[in-house]
Image 1: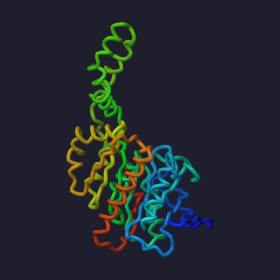
Image 2: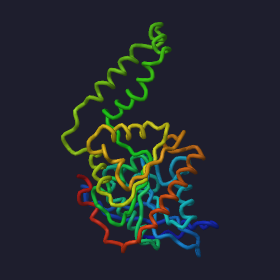
Image 3: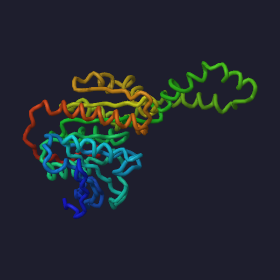
Image 4: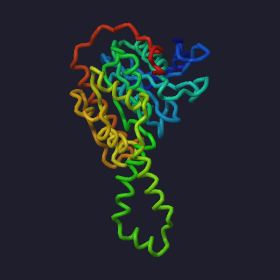
Length: 317
């Protein structure tokens, strides 16, 4: 890992670019990768905390996040004493290479954890992920059982399949439409085409699809969830289809049925929140929840930093 020369310092935090290098054993060409990260640290002289944060970006985003979500989160946490690393996966933002599917990012998350622990005076970290960044964090724990990671903060985790999406549409959209008198009035008057009813039928068929015989990424997420000895903070937005899909999936699949009863789970619902919590009040709420959750982490005695796991082994299984 190389540290770039450019450093930004504000009264509350210090930020600098870092080059994160790693190897992907599952890559066909066997070559390594380079990623750009931004390390946000407490200002000099400020008492640091014993836990760091690695932000795992989800979807087609880079380290800044929608409406600068990850920048604001990192600076708020660092101002409270928690070092934060956010980074661009290959093919995104300023990191070269081909894009990597979220279910194959274990080596990249491992390299980011290495970079944070080498750059900040902490021996443990949490992973903070949105959407398939949350899913990637669970898959990382399933693949590595990394003892350096003492918790996961998961915002609107991604579990989508055709069947789960169809089930969510039927229960949260089509059910309301079928109970709406205006829907039937417009249908009788020709204001709504038969395509609407065909859409209902298509979703009913899709939600009855048989489960795949191979281990799905959702099943491996559940294994990562169940195997985590640390704490989990689950944040779900009220007005987010992805959050509703997660709840539907957790309620209907055996691997997930008791997941929310995990002793270390703390669930928070964001009233009026959308997928990225774009409203300033919702962003602030997420930041406050994260700070309170991290403070609880410090109640546990910090453990010596274990050796990093072999993230390449099992990462693609």
